[in-house]
Length: 167
Image (cartoon, rainbow, N blue to C red):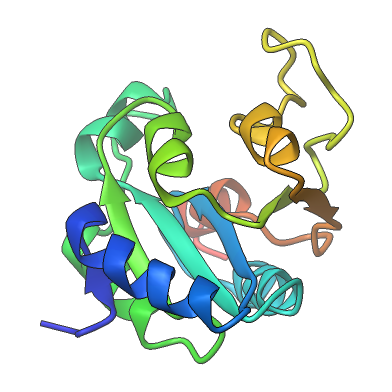
């Protein structure tokens, strides 16, 4: 098993050590089912927002509840976690099973919360699809909330659609 796939319990003392040395912790989350250049570009940009990037990865059960389709995830959670943990920009991957990463964000207390450009860091309406879960927690602690532009033309949904067409 990759030593960068952690539980919350494994993460907390490491994060405390990083914080004690003045390092900024960045958090992002997602499914990352079929890795593509949009994901890699996004994760590199997220990592550049601080010193360490923690990626909250939806486990298989939570992906099913997201309504992305019956066939999702394409790749099982351990395979997705293993690939992501090998990326230079990702310092640790933590699987979570809740519908949102709020519990994980509350526990990890990141300095920076990052999501893709389809989210709005200033959105406060929790019912809005552009609301960044956990942004209120991060801002309340004096942290930053950042939206990173998406790479046009790349998404897992579009990749799956192309595969179905045989392209």
